[in-house]
Structures are given as C-alpha cells and as structure tokens.
Image (cartoon, rainbow, N blue to C red; front, side, top):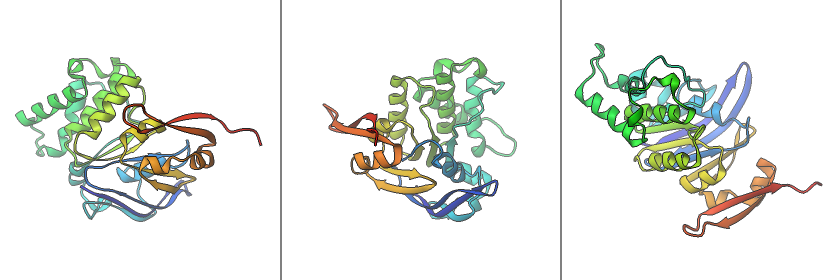
Length: 257
C-alpha cells in the first residue's frame, strides 16, 4: 500500500514546524526520515499517524486521504509506534499486544481464536513471547519496545510508521528489529537517529532540516560528505562494509573555521 504526502505543512501553537513536504513511500518499501534533533521528523510523522492535522496538504494511503477515513478504517491501514508511547500500562505484555486487534473486532469486542493466534505470532516475531505474562510496567526499556512493536504488528496494517523504533534497544536488538520490520512486507516510514542503521535498512531516505525536505533518494547517493556537513554539522568519511559493500559512515568534528 503506497503512501503519498503532498504539499504538507503542520502548525503547532501557531508556529509552522514543517512545510512544503512532498514524500512518497511505494508499497513494500522501507523509507527512512533522517535529520538533526528539532528538524521536524516527529512532527511530520505525528501528522501521518493522525495525532496532528495538517495546516495544508494531504496524507494519502492507497490514494485515499488518511485524515478523511474513519478511525477504524484508518487503523486497519496504518499502525504507528510513536516516540512518546506511554510505558505504564497496567496490563500484561500479552494484553498490551491484544490492543492491536481492536480495529478488527466487532463492537462487542469479542476476542476470537484468530486474534489470539495473531497476537502470539507477533510476540514471537519480535522475540518477546516469553514476556507474555509479565506486567508491562516491570519490563526493561528494550523489552517494552519489543512489546509495542508486537502490538503494531498484531494490528496487521499495510503501513507501519515508526518514530525512533530502536530507542532503548542494544545493538543486536536494533539489527533484529529493523530486519524484522523490513521483512514484514509492509510499507514502512520510519524516523531513524542512527545514520548507519538508516543506510543499511532503508530503500530510500528523506533528509529533513529546518522543517523542509532538503534531499531524497537511495542512501548511497544521499548521505554525502557535503550534505552531512551542511545538515548535521559533522565531517563524515564513507567506507564500504567489508561484506555487503553498503556505505558505512565514520564521523569527526568539522575543523574550526
């Protein structure tokens, strides 16, 4: 399912935080959004998953204006893992994951055998099935993140929006989660802090700075030394990964002018 963002602007408390955003995520592609802190990544994604309404422009999913869809239909098409997800649910991990099934249930809210199967599979996919009966507030940060990703997968969306999905995860867990998301067959739009993870896992990158898209394309053409100096204020050296050949970035401070 394809996502098109057209001429999008977002205002918060009377201040325009992002503007003139045009972005396309083709069906089944992993699209990364990168940029320095405060550049507008989270604001843009909050508009995509309907926590904010656009001041101008549209977010289209499979050609339909997402903000014009009903809540249930919107949730069947798109799931999100916000950066600021609350972490103090008074539920077990399994109960948190089961929340992802609500868009698929009748008004009576009956849990079906399919719901149970989908939730168990989602927990297993993220390597958290052993946490099913644990109280969510007692989990570590990384364990909570895995459970929340499982909740999004249990929703069975066509589009997955992730805001810094590797927060609180160690490096092995980061690689596992991003590989899982990439292999899930979904259209993924993710804000990522780590540029090397973005280069390795994303098909396309959009670079945002000052609330505007300043570059887009495949990672190996976007993450140039000049762009990284201009946008992130660092000196970057690109070296190929010894096995995959994927560009890997080494960073240093820019020399004093």
